[in-house]
Length: 206
Image (tube, rainbow, N blue to C red; front, side, top):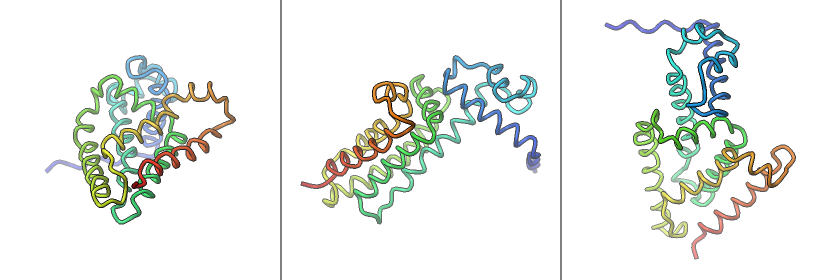
């Protein structure tokens, strides 16, 4: 019988968290290819040998981050409730995704960088748990459309459009702020109002 892994000590948990937070910052700025273990170790306040005690490679850190991030990213879609009002459920999903763009821009950019590179480290997650969940919720949206509760819409492209219109505010933050020159995060209120109106109009049956 295989022995259970020993629980991490408090200092191990602290150092692991420091490494992952530092890696998130560095990866989100420089991407996987542009990031080095030396950069992560310096940002975490650890030596490189100490970092390698916790993670054997840069890829191991990256995969750990992406795995946790993808699970977190799926939570708002999981919350789409078949018993709720369809338009309210979809708009709530839009607004939750927008909140994540505001509160977690580094995580969004990390995920976007991985996708742009062809998702070499998480393709199995995308073709597995992500696809399964999207298929499930696309079926729900299609049923709402069939029942006349929302306008006729391609459920997959609806979900893709929600990802695009919300994550844009994190992934292209410099561009948004350069054009709007907003005070800190005030543009998110305008985005929420606009996207609510957009999706309510698009989803309301004729």
